[in-house]
Length: 478
Image 1 (spheres, rainbow, N blue to C red):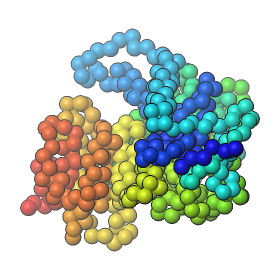
Image 2 (image 1 turned 90 degrees about the vertical axis):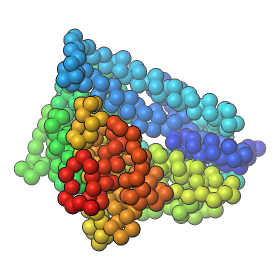
Image 3 (image 1 turned 135 degrees about the vertical axis):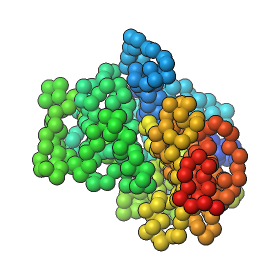
Image 4 (image 1 turned 30 degrees about the horizontal axis):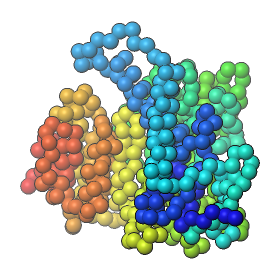
């Protein structure tokens, strides 16, 4: 005999657990299948993001930034620090405590919302049934009127650089080292590579990032990317473009990395190697042929604009479907699908999806880049404002970077916003909201911003787009 639900969700990451909670809020009998075991082999909710991704990496980024500032930056503030000590195991333990508190919080939310947590690996079989295989090997079968697949993604492995203990690791392993390596090589200078490289560089490691592409952060506005590369290089990150790794070998306590660049074959000896070349959808074992759910040419689950698959009543959200692999994107899709199942009207506006790199300075953006607007033949105007001209940034001693706003000349609508600088991830929210509500640059220019704040930089960038910024020289005057 099978248990029947209104909705069964596969996966309890940011897409899955949010979908399950929203379904339960809307009065549906809901179950969520999750197999994750934490580092203590205990079942845990939250998926990659809370357990080994977004949250633990930000905990280490925050801790290492404070350590670096105390060691190198406080003297300029008139604060003398001596005998600063680094306790990496304690730093890792703090990270683990944060993870435990947040994943436990989701478990509490499941209980308060009456959601059944089916612990194990879920597989969609025929007729909207789900088989759950527990960690002891036993199986149960459950049926549902609707199924939401939210099984997330896993790091891409390179056969030429196989993982090896704590010497050659993926993004998960790079969050667990108990001491500071002398030299670290990171394969990939994308978001994950830059964040992990920053963590260990701040703690004293020599860090080399090998990027196969010839462009740095090609998805970012070129002006912002250029500023970012200059800043990260100044911080000591050795970013090598057009560098294709051809293999690695572990010899004793060292890793030999082979790669090719414009000068030919190269060899590098390091203490640790991080493979950070991206992630791929986790669909292995999730679908049987009998389920009838189609995949696209990239191995993602094919869905329509409502995240419904070719099988009515089976949906897929988050990293297993088209679009950027972002936690907040998956969460919003989870809410949308839950509301659509309940008969409500709901949608996700993918044109205003925020993106963030949590380095220091942070890099954040939404909408179109200047290069995309040029390629599309859009008549636009750019407005910029440097944090060097911000009173609050000067008071913080954090004046690197800028805000850039792009507007449509004919409609004055914001087409994109790009920030590199202090609290960029938080500042971007204003632009996301403006674009969601189709605000004009004039609307932002007329919005009163508190002084002194970092958000004034967004205000000044809007004024700059119209040639009337107050605190920088304008190229034209109105």
